Image 1 (cartoon, helix red, strand yellow):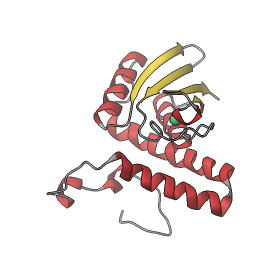
Image 2: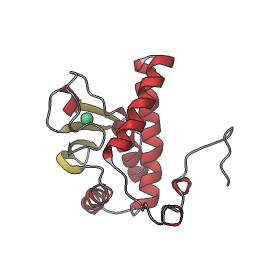
Image 3: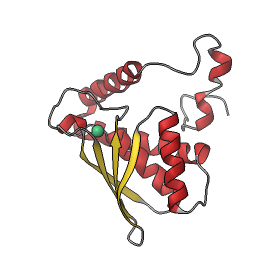
Length: 173
Ligand SMILES: [Zn+2]
């Protein structure tokens, strides 16, 4: 389907053929450019609809991305240890973050994930608040696509609230 502004739902293929489109510039850009996009968008959404609503929209966007990321970059139906290993590898390869599972209760589907050198927040000025709403949604989307169950993800530590890593609690709903 071609891009339709009025009826659009993000699909992985919408990212396009970067090698074709950027034969000299290539696939890579800088973290600053990614953050410029994210934080200018947040600024506009905050102004237009308030910070709480903006955070929810970032979560939902992250969720959509997480589902598509799982479907297009990860294998379906793997045991948990292989799923986690592949996820770690993909996040590393794409320069998103260094992921570690700190706690896992497989029966209750409860996890604590620790993310170092996060793309979204590592090195940000400390504001006292967590900022990785997009990552929360992204993780929820990935876990939901993997398990087929609804997940709730909450960031409990963030570079922005004075931590050196981001820590997420991941719970089945
Ligand atoms: Zn964070």
